[in-house]
Length: 208
Image (cartoon, rainbow, N blue to C red):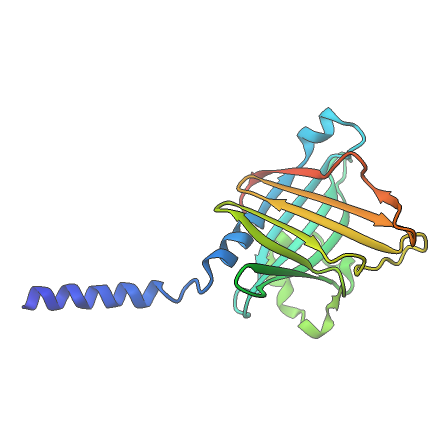
């Protein structure tokens, strides 16, 4: 009897320590696939119309509800890496089969040089200080156990560039690769910006 009681006690200790740690396995898996260091160096070698780019995604604000990622995109072909994009992205579940990522612009981006080396610098930021990119949310669905695909809603992601009426982005996320195809269209629905041949294909270099 004493032995059985001990087994039951250990079961409940183990269960209580692990069952609530990850509340949404699929959402956790999606964000885990996004986190890391990625490069399209191989693609750039095969097709010089694609610049050699480096993408770094690190999880921040683990003490806040949901999943928050800092994402940085830079040109890796330069001697000194030039940063092209810095975003904070929130991932959440919308319904039983859909997940959403919402991008935010960071105020005073120049104050954040390689912040992925010390994610504590984001602690001074508040959600109110971030600028949301309305209409540019990406909606993901699970395709297989290790593949998610996502895209923006049609014609809702506006652009500050005069000749671009809206921007469309599509993603395919797998264990070791993230494909991103972002294109801009004019009022007539003609593509006027972005790659014609296909998406950027980023391969995982290392986990952060």
